[in-house]
Image 1 (tube, rainbow, N blue to C red):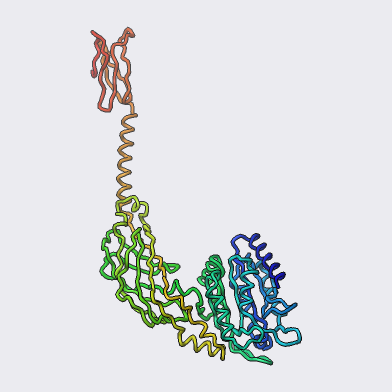
Image 2: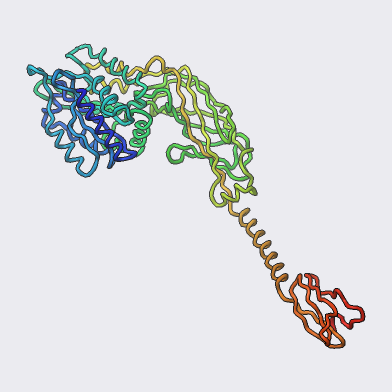
Length: 493
């Protein structure tokens, strides 16, 4: 197994080097004895599901590894690579062909192979990804029984210990699917698809896939969150704003709360009515102490809440929550400021956050989810394993907010008009300065016409050719200077 995994790790590293920024995906498909009906039932949609999911969540250039797993035995490594490729137009054919040839595995002697979920996930993280970030997908019937161990509850606890205690697993989601199948030895009602985001890069990639609906195109069931349970646990959705003329709130793209503020709005406080929503499906927040703070314009201020206690907050059933939010009016530029001129006709944006903190948090698995798990996996004690770790007793949700001040074009037009007037006056002055001006000079009863520019001095000669004076021209007129004694020179006729 070690040799196989080293080859697999080398492959992924080469793919990552060849395609910068690509996300490695490892698909682990269970083929132990418990999976027999998914392979033998002619109506089974198991293999088409894996094919479509793999092609939906990967992008051209991504590194894709498809591997079958059960439990390692001498001379029978697990996981075993079926496809190692860079996603391109031929990926569908490669994945479909590999799954078509896959069947349930058997141990030496003919017995159906056992299952070790922890071994498969651990190998994918430490060896297949080679310590790099990526996403591991696990497709299983949820029966974890290494060495045919019937203590499945204990084995599941070990599996979930790997999930909750492993720092490399940043996000863990479970998608329970209804898929009734009947085989020669067993029958089953459903499958579980797990998604494990490894490292920060894997977490970002998985978030983007979920936001883009890549998983939802194939699996319409909402994901059950296993991890994290200490952040992004609730969200606030604004309903209305009171006592703040010129201020309105709305949810923008990517979950950003947008506060639209008129330029002349100067109310220091806004009373906001929210819907508080639980985003931790399938958990109900049984109870928690609630507090909030806003960070806007360099100001870190508490948000006054109408209630500091939340109870029985189930997913999909929002509760009303009142609050008073202090607006950073002192930080908003006036309509005659340079920032306002720059943002004229659009908006000046002041980014910030609202942080909601839940202390003494108690979670419980919702009854509806427990019932669904009993239906899909009868006899499986898995719902008890969904119980959140005891150390998760607090959580924080960060809501991005943008305070947007909308400045009209009036101040900009007024400033533009003033600037144009100033420029016109300057142009007129420049023209007056540069334009030649006419001056009448009488020398010895002879009238002469001279042309001079502002700021110049010109000599004046008598009939004999002697310099008898000089003509100085200014913005305010002409004058004679350096007049020679006895010279007959005057301005005008």
